[in-house]
Amino acid sequence: MLLTGEESIRDTIAFPKTQQARCLMTDAPSDVSTNQLDELHVSSTWTDLD
Image 1 (tube, rainbow, N blue to C red):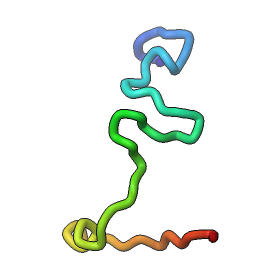
Image 2: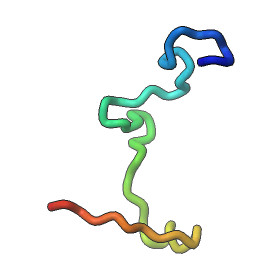
Image 3: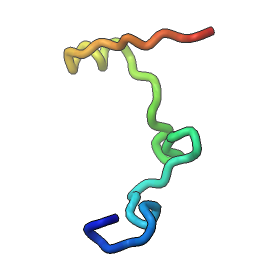
Image 4: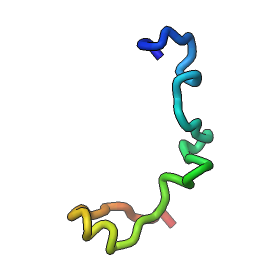
Protein backbone atom coordinates (compact mmCIF):
# COMPACT_ATOMS: atom_id res chain seq x y z
CA MET A 1 0.00 0.00 0.00
CA LEU A 2 2.75 2.43 0.95
CA LEU A 3 4.93 1.50 -2.01
CA THR A 4 2.12 1.95 -4.53
CA GLY A 5 0.69 5.09 -2.95
CA GLU A 6 -2.77 3.54 -2.52
CA GLU A 7 -5.13 4.83 0.16
CA SER A 8 -6.50 1.38 1.01
CA ILE A 9 -4.70 -1.88 1.74
CA ARG A 10 -7.55 -3.65 -0.09
CA ASP A 11 -6.27 -2.22 -3.37
CA THR A 12 -2.96 -4.05 -2.97
CA ILE A 13 -4.05 -7.47 -1.66
CA ALA A 14 -3.54 -10.02 -4.44
CA PHE A 15 -6.17 -12.49 -3.26
CA PRO A 16 -8.87 -11.02 -1.04
CA LYS A 17 -9.87 -13.04 1.98
CA THR A 18 -13.25 -13.45 3.66
CA GLN A 19 -14.04 -12.12 7.15
CA GLN A 20 -12.80 -15.46 8.49
CA ALA A 21 -9.43 -14.92 6.71
CA ARG A 22 -10.09 -17.81 4.31
CA CYS A 23 -9.16 -17.75 0.64
CA LEU A 24 -12.14 -18.62 -1.54
CA MET A 25 -9.95 -19.77 -4.43
CA THR A 26 -7.76 -22.24 -2.54
CA ASP A 27 -9.80 -22.79 0.64
CA ALA A 28 -6.68 -21.86 2.62
CA PRO A 29 -5.97 -22.35 5.40
CA SER A 30 -6.99 -25.99 5.26
CA ASP A 31 -6.06 -29.31 6.81
CA VAL A 32 -2.85 -31.04 5.82
CA SER A 33 -2.05 -34.71 6.03
CA THR A 34 0.51 -36.20 8.40
CA ASN A 35 2.55 -37.20 5.35
CA GLN A 36 2.80 -33.57 4.24
CA LEU A 37 3.98 -32.51 7.69
CA ASP A 38 6.52 -35.34 7.85
CA GLU A 39 7.88 -34.41 4.43
CA LEU A 40 8.55 -30.86 5.65
CA HIS A 41 9.86 -32.03 9.05
CA VAL A 42 7.27 -29.99 10.95
CA SER A 43 4.57 -30.90 13.44
CA SER A 44 1.25 -29.40 14.39
CA THR A 45 0.10 -28.52 17.90
CA TRP A 46 -3.50 -27.88 16.79
CA THR A 47 -6.24 -29.32 18.99
CA ASP A 48 -9.97 -29.15 18.34
CA LEU A 49 -11.98 -27.27 20.93
CA ASP A 50 -15.02 -29.54 20.57
